[in-house]
Length: 338
Image (cartoon, rainbow, N blue to C red; front, side):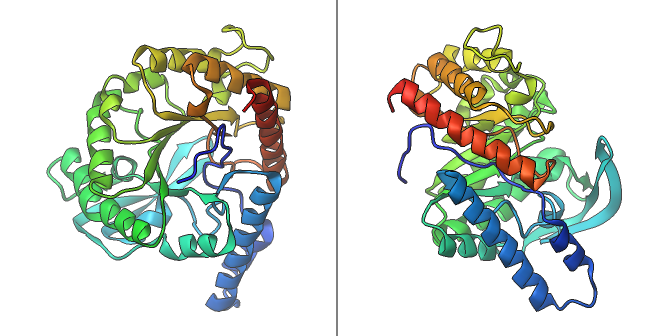
């Protein structure tokens, strides 16, 4: 896979246009027309990302309902228990595992092939990881959470990745937002990740967001076979420009730990706060990148992305944020002579 210095990338979901949401709810619209509409939005997102100058793209998860619910609908053995509150006034349909899980086929393959056919950019394919799927579900079958997580890893996620890689996927982002919610289970997160990718040659990232402290991942995460971390930083950082430690408090703790352990994996650096409408100035993005590059002692380890998927923002705000991210990255490249 081609390497790019300070490669810019999206993390995952974009908000769907209102017209698409309304169309999908309309019972008088045929399934064929609904699929065509999903294709149109997928292509629209893809071309917007390209036009903004992102180096690594996907389609904003245009064809998925939500990262968790979309997946459990496609796994035999999990049924819906009903809607529960996750955060703020956001709700999701929580699943119940009621029997031995069974893989029903590569549920992200069609969307990946569509993206592959419609872009020449590098592609990063996001999937929801085993630990999060188990942590967000009720376990009514397996003897332990560990058994539940590892069965998803071995018999759902690994076959999925194998099928995707067979069709040309070479960079897969495994989303594990639940990974640091139980720091005492970090060994299980690492074990399940490694089991999910075992024996399958590709580049792998792990996306973790809204951790209390990323340092809680250490030292266990050193055993993880990922090539890149995609992490949230901007949400906890100040909006002051400059590279002083006091101005970059959102990055300082993790970057210090990263350096202390001699890490050489890539960092997908979150430089956009996905929970505010304010547009980060390119100069702020630049300084966040330069600070992380200096702390890592190698700018080639730094890739640039939002903290998380941008579906919490309007499409206009999201694309404006990404535009600023690309501009700020270009400024950082110029400063670093890359």
